[in-house]
Each structure stands twice: as C-alpha cells, then as structure tokens.
Image (cartoon, rainbow, N blue to C red; front, top):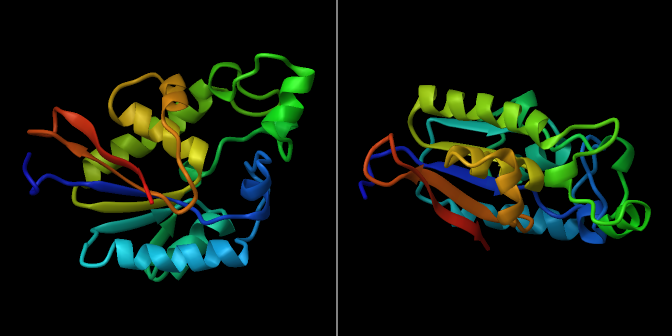
Length: 193
C-alpha cells in the first residue's frame, strides 16, 4: 500500500434546496444553501496539507462553488463529463414521486425517460477514468452524487449500475487509488464526513 501511487479525491457538492428535499437535480443549476456553503468551507480543513496536480469540477454552480469555498476555485477546471446524471423527465422529482408513477424504478437500472441511462453516465465516467490514469498525480474532483457513484464503480471495474451500491452525502470526501500498483484500482475511502 504505497502512498507514492496517485490518489483521486472526490468531493460531492454542498447542500442545495433540492438535495435537502430529495429532488433529482441533474442539469438544473441550483445554488448552495447557507448550510451548504458553510459545509463547503469545512472541506478545506479536511483537505489541508494535500497537494493536487489538477483540480476538476462539474460545470454546475453547486460543484464549482463548493470548489471555490473549499479554497480550490483558482485551480478548478470545469469538465462537462463531470456533470450530474441527466434526469430528463424526472428532473426536480423525488424518488417517492417517481415510484408513485413507476413502481420499482431505480435510476441505476432503469435510467430516465428523455434523460440518461446508466450506460450513458458510465461512458462519461469512463472518459474521466482514462483522463485520470493518463494525467497521473493526485487529482481533486468536485461533482454530484449519482455521477460520482458511477465514477467510483467504473474506477474499480464494476458496471455503471454498481454505483447503486455506493452512497454519498453532501460535502463528503472519497478517495480512489491503487492497492499495490496501477493495475489494482481500489476505493481507499468512501463517503467520509
């Protein structure tokens, strides 16, 4: 378990009104709540002493502003592939509302009408994984829950649907890395609050 191997730190954005209410927030550009801003500032202490060769963010204001409040705004490069799942017709709805119309629905298995499937999100995650492995070095990423869950699954070779097994709270920090060498990708930490 070498500390010389690169590590990828993932930060889910701070709280928004819709993350608080449980509404699916894909492409709606929601601002952080005051509590979300305060929690984003707290991420700085949790990453103190770490250095990163690159900082990437989803283009959403909730992710990018989390990076700014955590002290990484000047370094943060926005990448479209880091956007949250496109929920299409389910944007702004809660899981309970969706299940009332479509019993048994699961975003990771069933995707979203007029939005993305798990395979679509997985393809974006795969492009990010390739870039991470090509770039090397420690990298810090700010994005949203469902996308980061798929990214974590794809990092360790699970199908995109494997993201259903990984839960993320707002402003949580997770770490992807390797066990012995770059041929052994692992999840080193997950959903650290």
